[in-house]
Length: 339
Image (cartoon, rainbow, N blue to C red; front, side, top):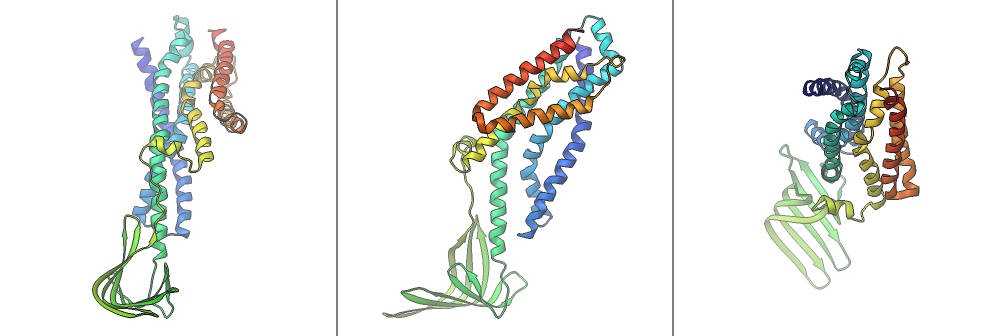
């Protein structure tokens, strides 16, 4: 029995890897095309694109692994059937339940990994990705250059005399006018600093003047910082539980929780269906394997999305129990009745 278990597992893992690589490659291309759309708004180099890809990697794995498991497990049993090895096993008294027990362990392991992925990793990765995009957008707002026109710098009007090669600016003048006073600042040199999402302007070697009805003031400075002129809108959460329970985008999180929970347990729920499709007598049955795989995946995903509006969180037990009952009935009719 131990050798049989290892034999089936070896076949399964080989097929799993051969199915996962092309699916992962296709999903990667799709997500990279999506990421490329950000370049219309912000400037991204290869390192930035790599960071964004790492942020979406948990999501890519989450959506490819359940499909890979379902397809690889079914193909493993179907290959054993086409080689007549499955008939030999049943002739020796091996029950179909033993085959399912072998696949149950990797199914449970994968479901636990998928649950950890969407409950813990994906919220963290999405927050990092959102903050990174906000950070790059805020940097884009500071794409300053010397010109005869001024720049808007928060509540200030900024004029730059010259650009320097070390990413600093020369002959900088800022002007701010409000109801009570007017302020004008000139500096020989300036640079932009982005510190943890807080953008500020560092002025070096200059003078400042303020004028109001009551007084006129003048100062000279070696270094001056204009702080909090613009801040990056960053998302912060301390724990995954806090992320899922927060009211921010509550409806979207509810949809994700229901859908991702059902996708996480799909490897376990699909075992009866794997046996029903994969175990076949090729002499008497015409194999429509890939058609059945496609239809079953579409039905499961489609039902999950369709019932959410009506049932809410009750969609999880409703789909799970219905899927188990229906697939066990198919398994009992097509497999247990014959083997």
